[in-house]
Amino acid sequence: MVLEMSNGSVGVGVIGYGYWGPNLVRNFASHPKVHLVGLSDLDSKKLETGKRLYPSIITTSSYHDLLRNPAVDAIAIATPVHTHYELALSALKAGKHVLVEKPFAQSSDQARRLIDEAAERGLTLMVDHTFLYTPAVQKIRELLLKQELGNVYYYDSIRSSLGLFQSDVNVIWDLAVHDLSIIHYILDEEPVAVSATGSCHVVGSPENMAHITLFFDSACVAHVSVNWLSPIKVRQTFIGGSKKMIVYDDLEPTEKIKVYDKGITVDGPSDNAHQLRIGYRAGDMWAPHVSPNEALQIEVDHFVDCVRSGAAPISCGMSGLRVIEVLEAASRSIAEHGKPVLLKRQQPGIRAQTRATA
Image 1 (tube, rainbow, N blue to C red):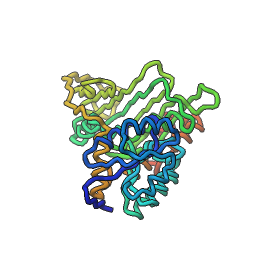
Image 2 (cartoon, rainbow, N blue to C red):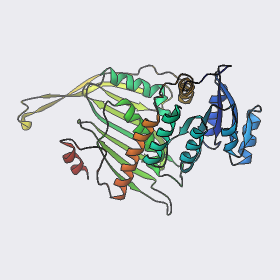
Image 3 (cartoon, rainbow, N blue to C red):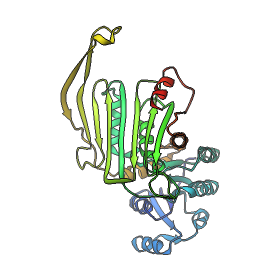
Image 4 (cartoon, one colour):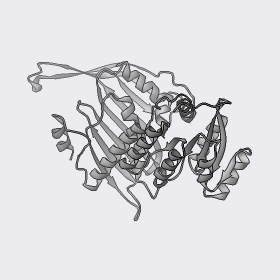
């Protein structure tokens, strides 16, 4: 549904003003094509803070007030994960476009229901996979599309920090969701199986550290390590290809991406592995220019454009569903001590790879 507005602006209501909500509110409030209508939260002190910073907005403890408000065209949801489905479904049924914080929902069944509801009503449904909108990830995708790295051999990521412990999701649903969304976005193939292990060191809480392996039909393999009990914050990714390799450090203030013209060369008859001679190629390193623009600003602008035009978002509902399917499979694998879980029909070669990792 293409939104037609007399004044050219999109009326937005935000539900949730805890950890991520203030960032959404700030970006919507500063957007030239947005009218920030209101804010809802159950905490009156948070509402007072929001009202003090944005005096013209409506504040309410009942999100239904935003859903009933005809000035609200779109709803942004930044609440605990267990509330996402109910809030998003209610917003869609009220005829509102929806941006929902990651992870999209608690299950793939819930995600499919939201996708169907949005499709039936012709509404925009977008998942807040913020990292897809970082200029760094956009640049990496551009390099891969141009075949700068050649055949992609691996994606290795470490994402760790001290906290934030959450009660309704474990560490993979909190941190690994970022890398899973990035992998789906930058690689030109879908994973076919996942193996994962996790550990819990706080009684009564979900897993606080985990290691995930994704298998593909090709020789590519992805490893994602996530940890809530790290003494330092780490956001580092290595992507290796047959031609070049990338190091992506999201915490690096300037040169977030470094491209290395390094690799190996193999000489010798292919039918005799014992006679192969491995050579090493060491070329230049270069750091491509990456825009300093805030990812959330880019994402909010994209959401507004999709609402206005009816175009499908980059992080659409299907994007969110694919990530949740991997998260569910990884959770099952953790429960079975790392046993590989298939994501689709297994192709030749995958069975051997997954057996070797189990």
